[in-house]
Image 1 (cartoon, rainbow, N blue to C red):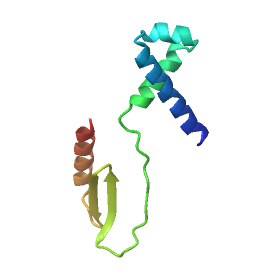
Image 2: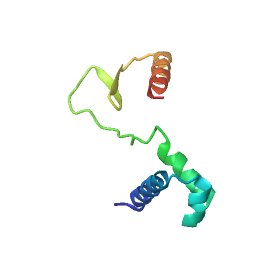
Image 3: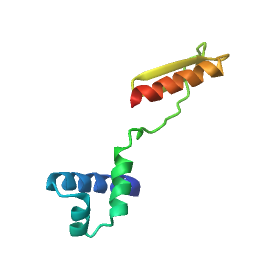
Image 4: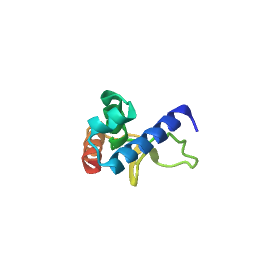
Length: 99
């Protein structure tokens, strides 16, 4: 595990302990000697809906599609001469759908 992954795992564990304690954020942080700002940073960071890693992958087979975008289960295929305005509309719709 990388240092980043270790920190995420540690804070996921801490947040679960806080939830299980049924204490307020302030009281739990005081008992754990953790600053409220650090606690809130990690709480916000780990509750963020966008945590997926972006991966670019070269297409192996020749295709008429120039680009394929994947976001979770959603896939978007763009031809070489795609319309940028249409792409913007699609990305806005995807963002709204993920909320």
